[in-house]
Length: 324
Image 1 (cartoon, rainbow, N blue to C red):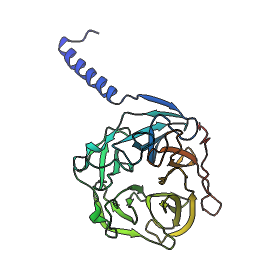
Image 2 (image 1 turned 180 degrees about the vertical axis):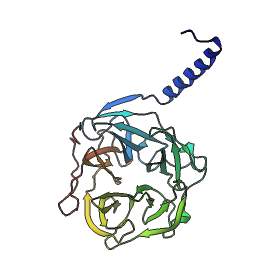
Image 3 (image 1 turned 120 degrees about the vertical axis):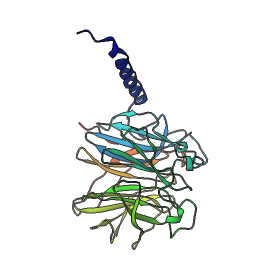
Image 4 (image 1 turned 45 degrees about the horizontal axis):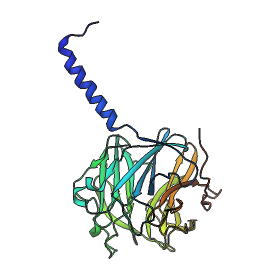
């Protein structure tokens, strides 16, 4: 069938737009993991994982160079896998300069959550607050959803230092209610509205016996039990508590992951993927360059005891096996 000449410009325009879209979202690096650290071509930190269908999406911070003496983090990275062995690195989805109100800050830890077909990336900027970016695809590109911080130090009512408002973690409960946890030195939490860019109601504080909280809260749920994991002490180890309710009361359960030894910080993500549980964290284990400021993401298995408590996570060089 011969197309009318008047349709040719329209078809060319559509084809050009599709080609440009494909180029913008094209992948540029395929990686086969060979144990821990997971990636050895870049320094990665502060992992946050999200599972969608048969794909695990891994969002990380980005330490710029090896052997650093301080934090230098100006963008975030995103990777994906379907088998825990073969990874795709996607184009850089978000930079600190994408937040005009925070472009002089640092690209600290974040967390991505899906809601109503959109993807919300909650990020921390060291001292200017927690922001949120939004995208139509897990790989981005993301853009600032508010044009201002979602949370600032003013919301951290029990804290007195400038980096109190960091490390956001999102958890959506079975009833569909999204929650945000965050903090350094003190742990805060609040409900999010359905639009995911507004706090809904009162900001509250987590506290319980044995709670030596440093930063990096993370919530997950299994068999009706809520688990709060977090970095404790400094140098940081990962500890955890359990509860029958998202708002507590929480019961301290002990250490989950020991001090790495070559990284003062740790930052965990816990996720179930293809019927297996994973503990994702960072250390300074990339050889000849790894430090507390040049970190690398690692993955090891997470196991449960019969009573619902967690087995101590053992850091390994071998990492995890591929899954079908």
